[in-house]
Length: 199
Image (cartoon, rainbow, N blue to C red; front, side, top):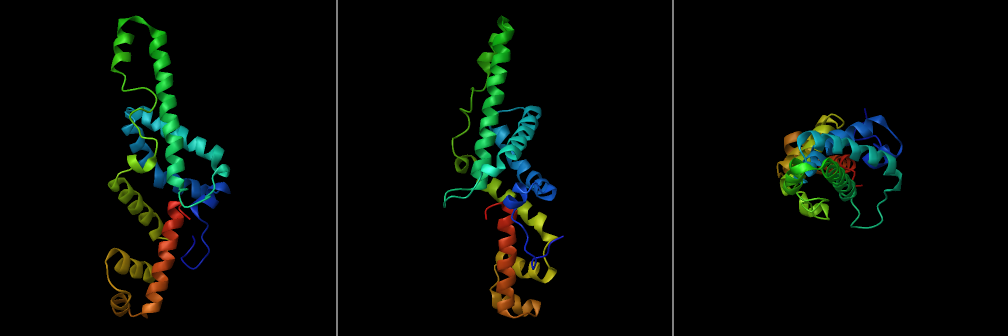
């Protein structure tokens, strides 16, 4: 298991290398968010779970094509686009089934259908992902990296970033130098960005 001192591969490079641990981290980290997007696309729970799996399969097939080209490129936005496409595909298949069934029951279901394609979902991820979604995602990433980080580095990060202490105050409490606290904080923050796939 990597520590804060080792060169931990980013989530993205681990996915491209077909690293099983990175894929597991992707599912652990982003699975709940993808499921939330699916539910916002008005999919029932069982369909949301299926679309989530289809999304991960599509990511595995196309991860090599993803690259950060500029400031606006984010893995989460790319993942949202794939999810949105699979939600639309689900609704198109559902519509074909209902149209093919015929009869008054199917016509009634079609009229109650929540809106074809992805009309209920915006084009861009930032307008569908709430502040609470982002917080949950960061909290989940923090849970996932905590075991990979030295205890004193974790405490330095926790006290300064999460607790709002200055590096001088945290250094006094941890019996470290302020420079060591700042370095530890930066290392943990970098590891967190790697976990989120934003590096």
